[in-house]
Amino acid sequence: MGTVRSRARFLAVVVALLGIQLGSLLIAPAYACGCGAMLPDAERRVSVGREESVVRWDGRREQIVMSLTVGGDAERAAWIMPVPNRATVRLGDPELFEEVREATAPVHRDRYYFWPRNGDWPLVEDDDTAGASMPGDAAGAGVGVVGRQRLGSFDVAQLTATDPAALDRWLRDNGFTFPARLRQALEPYVEQRWEYVAVRLAPDADGTVLTGTLDPIHLSFAADAPVYPMRLSRLAAEPQSLGLYVLADHRMEPRGTIGGATPRVTYAGRVAEKSGPLAELAEGTPYLTAVTQEFPVPSRISGDHRLGRAASDATFQEVVYTDRLRTVAGIPAWLLTVGGVVAAVTALVVVGRRSVRRRSRRAALAGNASPDYLR
Image 1 (cartoon, helix red, strand yellow):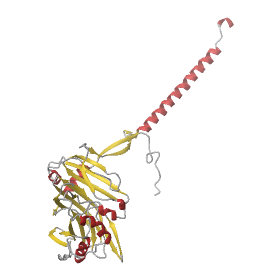
Image 2 (spheres, rainbow, N blue to C red):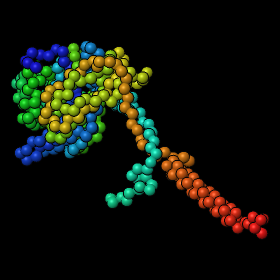
Image 3 (cartoon, rainbow, N blue to C red):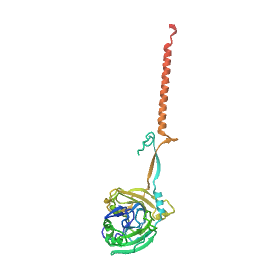
Image 4 (spheres, one colour):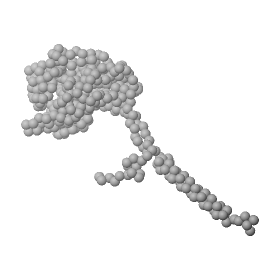
């Protein structure tokens, strides 16, 4: 991507949180998912169990709202996100994620089958079976603190960095360890002279660990074209999943696979809500696209996702089918059918036998009768 500052980029900050566990002399990423690096305080661990993000792109500015659910035994953690331009940061609305999940939820429909399957009678199978004190704003050479604010449980510092080593020094001065592998992964962003949003997380009460769903963070910055950062996810040891909600004028899609499976659209359509956080964020960008992608081998991730307009604005919504055995008045239809056939066959057999007996009797009677001339 070169050393020239990318003016046409934004960082739809989602999916690459690196949970890093420090034990003895070994530093190993415990969790990665796209939007940055998560670092616990010394001798502790932190993991991201769930992450959701909504990205808004209006052709000039990018907005990202992120919600993270974390676990572990750390009382503090640092979260580093690279951004292409100076960002503004505020708290987001938790209801946004409830609304976007509801808006993009699949349609559930019943699908009926006739013959019994495993689990249906008579094919039933037996079961064998943020309270700690915050360090000061010490800034090493090459790092500038261009903004600082307290947002709920977040202590947010906006940094500029000329090289990863400078960011390393800043983190160490503020109580965090910066793994060498992460420093190397950030080098392309440093070459492009991106800035960083450094978020220090702490529980609301002293002496408690950082766990549960955190308040959403809302970022906004200028951009000429949207790009979704996935580069840091290559450090993950386990397979990764990308889930992204994109609000724009039109249906959006990633331009490539960047080393993962083919991205899959799970929802595409215009926002129907007229009020609430989703409607407010979607004003001027009414088309919502939900995209998911799997990365079975994270080390193959080759770069960041570029997002662009899809070939059409065709709507789409997933349909989830529930297979059910067809019944009539609570009785399996196949049983009624088979029972009816058996009854019909039985009736035919009975009628046939009766008919044979009647013909036999008639024949016997006819055989016993003598003509008058023989008498």
